[in-house]
Length: 447
Image (tube, rainbow, N blue to C red; front, side, top):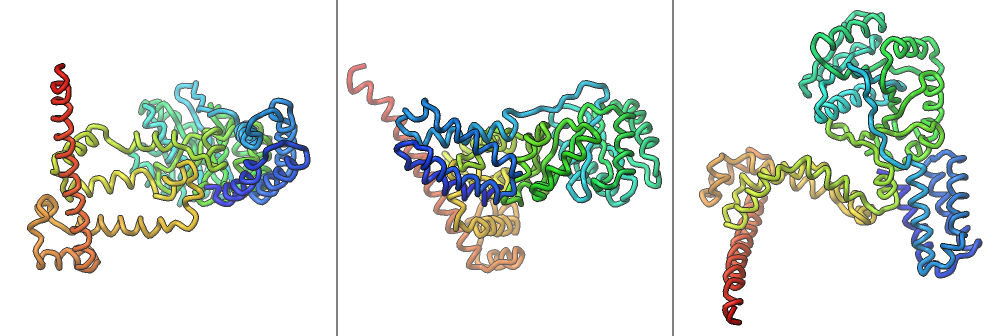
């Protein structure tokens, strides 16, 4: 996420950190690099101009001039201004009605249908009862996709194949929601172009009918400055309440995210960071600014870990490790728990300095290694996982063939696992020894 922008800003910051004294000349030189990095990231040029001007004005202030580390102060000013640029604080959904309606709009291919499913999952976790409404009457595939997502989430989907009247479908959906006690309707509407006035007016009529609490514009983050024009057009027609930025995992530039709030004065509420239903996050401006500036986002990483890891299971696993009872079955569970956190790249990217660590790192190779390990362990019987000592040559050949690897790779995994078990047993003995010593030490001093 924002790899190119983050890398270029890091280069600019190296020069800023070296500043022992602030002057208009050297601040101007350093901020020129920041400006070029932002423009290259496809941030709206007016937004960049105003941003640089604000940073420059504050950097040349008396308070900063007297600072012990003036370069660090400028970086802090850039961080604070970027937070303001992105929206200052997280904007939650405002769901007041019963049932509440959410209207998702946007261009063709921006990710509305997938975002509808992701939003339903999020609301479901918050204790609401969502209903997905297939309001794209022009593309049958969209209805099929939404229906599939609904089955995955176990969320009902209201659709009427063959129905061409969106308003009639909306009325029926509201009646269905009231009958089924669904308190949140998510309307997945048809994609449309800015110039397609009849379809835009249809959206306006739908808005007037359902009176949604939230009108969310779904935007592809890779559209750059064009996202600003799209957002302006939809906002003028519908008076949107916020936006969802999709495909941020594949966007190396990030201009849309940095331009949107300033131009539309409407907050970014959610971001899509992958194709899976769980790859969906509330948008936190401060955390995003820290990620862009290479300072990491440990808070989001901890939240993701808390969601993915079962604490009781983790305690049980820790106990087994200390006693040296850790099996290949437990190891398989750990690999799968780690996969829930996301890709290694996304995890490392959330650590301070993570973007620098990613340079030249072949994390794809490491993930491939994890998948191979999982495949090998899955090729074993439950008895073999619990008691790897029974794995003779014949069994190892069978496992290798079944998991599509060589016998050497199976042997390598088993050797590494054996070493890990030995290390855990030694650590467990060391802990016991220290505990006994801790009890004996007070006696030595007559206590």
